[in-house]
Image 1 (cartoon, rainbow, N blue to C red):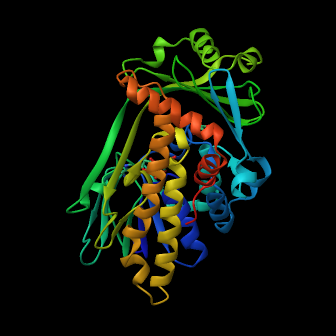
Image 2: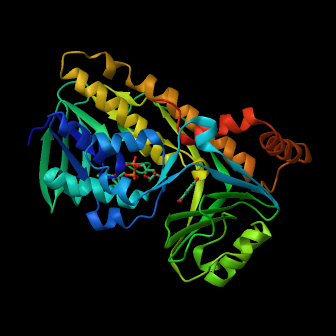
Image 3: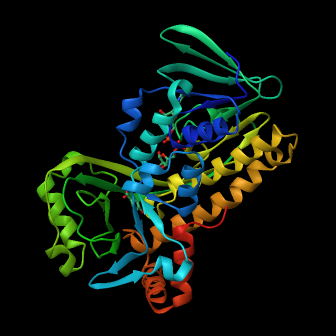
Length: 382
Ligand code: APR
Ligand code: PHB
């Protein structure tokens, strides 16, 4: 098989890029190791920056997002009993869209048809400095795709990053994880609530008016089995303002999992004719809702650079890594800051504790600080 762009990874990054290129008449194929149902079974992000929404519409897959997603013009931040609304729309002129990653991935799959090959194994990007090709096996049979470019959109545990020579990796881990619960209950609040409490962080989010998503910070040593539903709901209530806890509607969890938090960036994001995008190149703690949205700007830059290349201009591809990383690092900074602001760090000194409390006190007392949070949360320009 020969296509212009071979894409490794059928998550949001790979699918969105393939669909955008397709509409430009640029041929691609997506190699995904798991089945479509397996990919759709992952419960991931839920908040889309306005730039992501524009890309979905440009890709011709934004209709259900606009029909079923919820436009959110604000979020709440609570510190104990004190709760403040961040007026995203008023402070930044933009809003965010609450629409599950599962749903937008489904919308992309429905548009992609046969351009996704599921169940691939032994994927290897090759010929990166010459004539690129990808080898893989499918149902035990060897296969190969010849292409002009290879996109590594295969996530943090993918193979593509290993093909980047002279790579530099930056990162940190956090001394806690997030226990997430999905429940078919009405959300406790019409807008998201990020809550800092002496017992640890909690987040009240949603997927729709009948599907709620909640998180609490837990020690890394915990497992989901340590948290039966009753224990989870009781702890969540302890970490919310009383008025919010009192109106929390609990119910059986339909999904429960613990995710560790990490910050990670790999530089550069390209080597020869291989380009990394999304989680393959960078990971953020979920506090700032930037994981999926940082992938979106990579896709935006790659989409325009590849379209320009096939129109005779190679500059975009040559400058991709530097351009993508400039925005990735801003998402890293914001995600690290939101995480540092709202979580309880067991080992921090009294000075660090005081700084954390002052950071939140400054945020609540300064429109400039709130404006800075708002412009980062809705998404900095591409
Ligand atoms: N061969 C083929 N496919 C692979 C390989 C491989 N060797 N390794 C991984 N994959 C697939 C995974 O099965 C996954 O479906 O690549 C896809 C990568 O998708 P994601 O991990 O979702 O990464 P990305 O598309 O960049 O989207 C980032 O997804 O994980 C969330 O929080 C993250 O919201 C962010 C978003
Ligand atoms: C979610 O709904 O899963 C979600 C929302 C906001 C975040 C993180 C996760 O910051």
